[in-house]
Length: 436
Image (cartoon, rainbow, N blue to C red; front, side, top):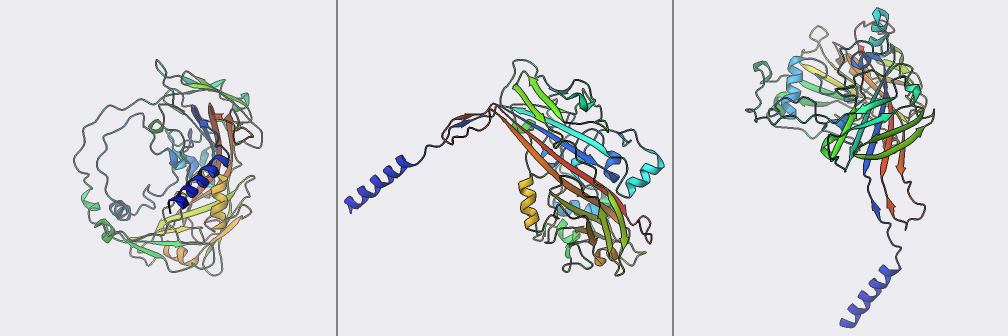
């Protein structure tokens, strides 16, 4: 037995020696992300500067209020149901954060543009977020800037400012909800799939039982969102827009050209974007009209370079329409049951291809979807329709990955540039018309 064991160990050692050596990798010292978004419809009314996505949620705010203890999911959903505000801010696209007052950032506006936005169109808004994270720490206050192409029409450079750290705050008492929200009423119906009729009976959530901690097992589509640089994941961090520079991205801005990022906590970062990697064309709803069977057909323009599409609708019923006045309705274009997935945000092309194969995301050649009759019947008050066209992504590394897998790769910097185009509209404002 001892001899067999010795032979086994010797064979394993020989195999290890014969295996190819793994490449040694270090870095990157600095990581830089450029997030470019185009928006139309209702989302454009409050969009101005940034195009942050849900991956930025742990970003330190410039001014932070004390954080009370938050209620559980059931309490929040119950509060949303009690207020009967569609979505109540819980399910909206977080990719359109802004500090502006809601005016048209591109110089448009007026009654015609407002009505166009209500219908999923209007003047396109271009948004940009720049995020730089580094493992290095400067000796003094951190400084960095992004030298931009002249086609951006935003000056020679954009400052990347490190957010101010909030002062320590004492922990507040337990979170207390207003009296009218402590006993949530109603329920939520979750539908899915494009077609004249719903693919199956809706998933029903009861807010009262959920507020008591009885959370049902909800179907979720596994999504792997990207995680951009942030202050919590970097020794030093800077971003734009920021407190020093709040200018808006012009309507004719172009990312095409040479870019350079420099600062006292990052190596110089240089990359070039061609015309194929620029702001996406706007996603616009071209028509929406009822089918003979009572469903609603929605069509949109084909966005060049889109890797896939996804849509979601959130609304509420009404007592006048035959409902109980305490029911929220959610629908997604996914052909498989899902709820609350982070699909209205930037996703890498590889992830979109996987979701298309699973029928969770519509194919890039798709230009129409029918919202089922059951959803239309349940939406007595109408609702907010949101949609995204996922875009391409381009990545750079300095130095580039060696061709030999055995060669050491000491990475100084990496860059990711990602794109999306979104739209949203109010459904049910003028029921009975072809473009409602």
